[in-house]
Image (spheres, rainbow, N blue to C red):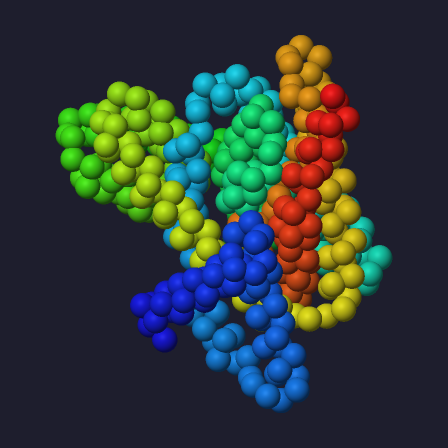
Length: 413
């Protein structure tokens, strides 16, 4: 099946599932699409066990899609750029210390806590996963997913200050998390041989390079936007950022996700205010909102049907269920300590630790990173555990974060 037919099939499934969700379930689109996709995939598995159909054609299709490549090197740049376009940079700057700390120290501490805890968990269950691969799991599951977070927060009723903190953290910790994952995975596979100092230098180059490159790219496109008043050309320029810019960042071995966030913030703030007419701003917003909805729909359908490639081992499922508690506990600590320390000198939003913990959703990026692991028993176990945590995060946390916040606010009043 060629690229066009794969895209046609995914788009058709996304449209049908979106219709079913809107017509009958009335859930938030991303959650509804993933639940319906999971039901669809589970039905296929059950019919395969009954000898009615075979999942082999679908598994072959998923192999052709290469979920990790599609997300990390295709969809991610556009989704991050679209998310950053609508974030006010002044709001981010007001909480820059907290957001910056959570996106760096928070990710690193969560990686260590989850990794060490997962190593003990895997050992107790007799799974024999090495410590370095347990840390790989910690790295891929620690960043909150800006795609899942943004989609859920729109309807959750989270106070503005907390929404800014959660959104800002998820936009930046994604880029940091991917870099940390790649470094640890390189050490696990032997592709990276480095001292702690060299590892820190590599992290600084990847992260700092992504930020600087994104700023340069945003500045250049801003001036190009200011020189024309033709919305078709201006939309094409923003598309060039998320395609050519992301590809260039990969060639330079710097963080493409962070580059997209910085460029999106510049275009969405300075570009919107000084370089575009009202008509262009309106058309640009409509285009990227539609692009965001379309890519989100495809992404969450893919998450649901990727269940077909999982190793359905009850032991892995049990490990995943316990890992949910481990990941939430690590999130509580990695968020709580920075919030308490920063809160002594700077005002932080009320109930920040509780909402950041429960509202820190995991999503497609964690699944994509898990799917990118080399073949082996460690990959099968980590992939299944990751899926269990992500499904719980999106479905259970995603559906309850709104009522959870309302209850906290009600108590405060």
